[in-house]
Image 1 (cartoon, protein in one colour):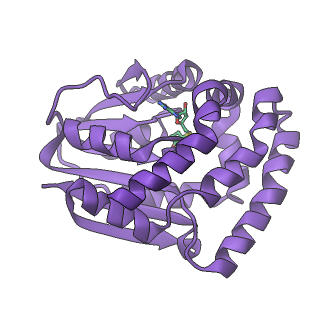
Image 2 (spheres, helix red, strand yellow):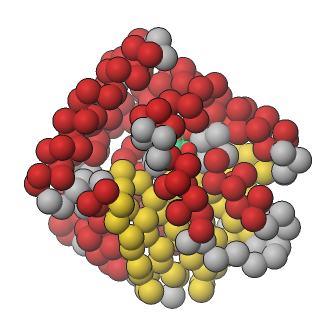
Amino acid sequence: MQSFLEKESIRKEAFQNIWSDELDDVFSDVAEYYDQVNIIASLGLLNRWRHRFVSTIDLSPGQKVLDVCAGTNVIGRALLSREPSLDVQAIDKSAAMQEVGQRLAQEKGFTIKSTISDVHQLPFPDNHFDIITLQWASRHLRIVDVFSEITRVLKPGGYFYHCDMLRPKEKIVAQLYYAYLHISVPMLAFLFRSGPAALACRDYFIEAIRMFYSSDELSELLAEIGYSNISSKDILGGAIGLHKACKA
Ligand SMILES: C[S@@+](CC[C@H](N)C(=O)[O-])C[C@H]1O[C@@H](n2cnc3c(N)ncnc32)[C@H](O)[C@@H]1O
């Protein structure tokens, strides 16, 4: 765990100001067109990746689900489409993202409970949820702290499902990936006429991945935190990783 704690303190030192002061403005800025930006940024592949992630999630009727950093409730809506009897709770610190998420859920006739709060402390009881999901957000978090909170609120035998952009293990894949991001991030900012907050964070979005974990490292971290039955799937040579882990 020592090496993860050291890496976490380097990430915190580099990004804490952006995480606490600037990211909220970025997500408020993009909330209304967040889904469209992601579809274009992924060259249309986003829906396929989301389907792949959501299809790894085992569901039973009536289960309690927590979606951490829920944004516009993409995951909550997809899970309720598969199993309408789920009891879904979303948490995100961006009220703007959750407002859009609530509207989109209501349009489908879904109920998703919403809590606006920082996820480094989860305002839920111990051993409460059957399933916890976290998609496209860990790069912006102190993950040892958040994963530990997730463990606390997950029931024993419950599953944590994680999906994010990761640091590819192979140098050549990483170089191609960063080159693509260097071109696509400013282009998207221009296309969607991003405000000053998003423009100021263009380099951050690439650096956050460069200083993040590889798929294998993420599996190791989950094991160190105490999860068992850990499995992972890499997409695009590890540029995206899907992880599934059980609380013992
Ligand atoms: C890229 S979006 C992902 C949203 C959603 N999970 C999805 O798959 O579309 C990242 C989300 O993480 C949220 N977020 C970032 N840091 C957070 C924090 N410390 N506490 C709560 N939410 C946070 C942002 O507000 C944003 O809605």
